[in-house]
Amino acid sequence: RLRHLCTVHETIRVKSGAWDPSGVFVYTTLNHIKYCLPNGDSGIVRTLDQPVYVTRVNKGVLCCLDRQGKNVEMEIDASEYLFKLALHRREYDRVLAMIRSDRLCGQSIISYLQQKGFPEVALHFVRDDRTRFSLAIECGNIEVALQAAHELDERDLWHKLGIEALRQGNHHIVEFAYQRTKNFERLSFLYLITGNLEKLQKMLKIAEMRSDVTGRFHNALYLGDVQERVRVLEESGQLPLAYATAKTHGIEEDATRIAEKLTESMGEDVNLKAMLLADGGLEAKLMLPPKPLVRCDDNWPLLTVSKGFFEGNLAAAEAMSGGKGAFDMPDADMADAAAGAWGGD
Image (cartoon, rainbow, N blue to C red; front, side):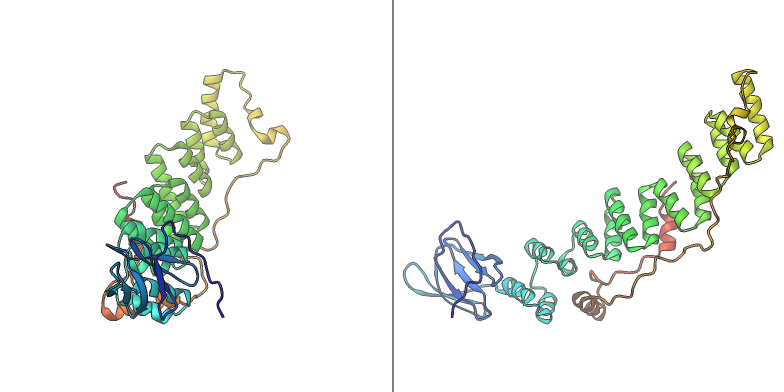
């Protein structure tokens, strides 16, 4: 009993067709031999110099009649549609065997695998670093994405890598990505939430070297460094704020010095008491951040998840052959990477 599987629209009239024993319909148009899978996916097998009429397809051999009515046998490469058919039927052992045979290549296969939700398989076929980066980000393979970003070394790619690494809780790579893009504000906040006060102190010095007033003040706030905040406000000409900060936090020496400057610049009628919240009837509170109880040196703990069918088998095959494939990348030394990511700064 026949049943409708799918419909394929062609702009040129179909000349003939026959079923491959695997279950793929192979047909011809004026200029091409094409195929159609049971799920509706179609593609081109090869081009034709002249029209032919298919009579039989089996084991990579297409039997047909030419325009003169003579029997002709043509060899065709059926690997593409057999690969897609095996993927559709979830015959992953067969898919893996075809990948290892290296008979498949081309942008169409990569696009097909992406479309069908197998970016980790597409990654095996790609050697272009930009495409590898996109596929690695899509399937969450941080190690491969890091290696591709190293090769390309572009700001946008480092930014995307930082976003994906942050989503996975890998703050070592987040730190490295922020350093490569010199994203100082995000880097300071990363050190704050991970409790790394030593590197936060380093960020304060970097902001001072860069003459970044806002960066200095933010880092001083994160560190609870009141004297630095007073110094930043005083140097930037915000004398009333500098006086209020010093007086509120009990730094009398700085408060006295700044009060003298205020008197000189604003005259004798300056009302210093009005600058303090305590004299206005409100209870002032010191803005000091709490000290971190635990410094987060390790990445965010993740559930142990076994590798997928393709990822695990391809990595094992690469390891046995001694080669380096898409799933067998060397681990990045985050400590050394973070130390050297600043360049010449």
